[in-house]
Length: 210
Ligand SMILES: [Zn+2]
Image (cartoon, rainbow, N blue to C red; front, side):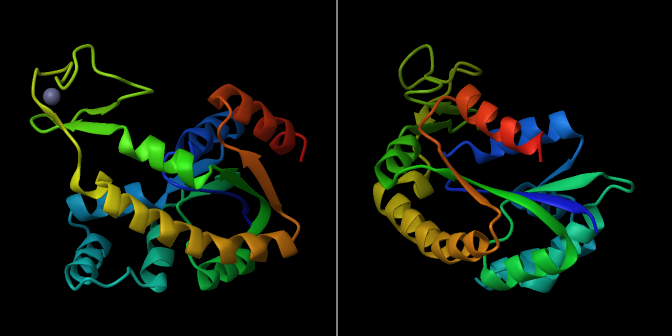
């Protein structure tokens, strides 16, 4: 069985960054489900077309399709996998445990208030799509894109009501996953308010000894 490490965390918790850093260090393959889905949709692969159809109908992407997507993306002779954005449900977590040797789950714990603050600060250029953040990556000139001079706007899904809804969904979904992984004694919670380098050293100290 292939080794697997899972990163759980809300948007803005830095889980994508940490997953990528650990993948570079260990040689494990980093699988970001959201990116994979977008890639398959934009390349209009067979899987991508099926995913598009379910999204158009307003349904969740079925588990079987997610598993197929993962299977299709695995590199041969990969020493292990770092999952980012998977699992999202208990059945997916059970599938993972059945098919991989789950070494560790890192939960990057960001409080609801901090998650809101991080999401509310996001701005995107309406012309070229460049991303900015009022706190962590501000534009040189307020409201203006550094890349093209276009106007920076707040994405519809970063509006306060949409953020609240997304956060509520995340915590509901993650609560069940956390207790499931706790019972398996693989879960480590790390305060995600810390700087990237501190979170990184906690994870590396654990992962590279394990
Ligand atoms: Zn721009």
